[in-house]
Length: 123
View 1 (tube, rainbow, N blue to C red):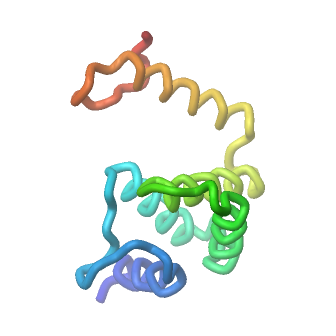
View 2 (cartoon, rainbow, N blue to C red):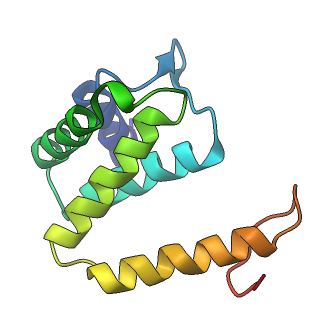
């Protein structure tokens, strides 16, 4: 077993609500897997603990409440928790995060359906 396997195993054990099957996590969209991978990587680098992560994710899920429906609801809360933790730890300032989100949104709107989104594309 590698250190990476141990880290992913710890993440899975700490996140009982993570959608999974017998083989491990199940992701409906590529961005779900990317958000999961970023979280595991940042934890492995010591940016935050699993306890901090679980508390922050739980708070985001609770805040969404009944309004959170659909396949993306869990990972929307996941992404919000990741953004909150990174801002709280000073990893990224809110203005920079907002500009990056806006840049991705502009690139997504300028990208033809089915093509990869590339930063720098403008609508």
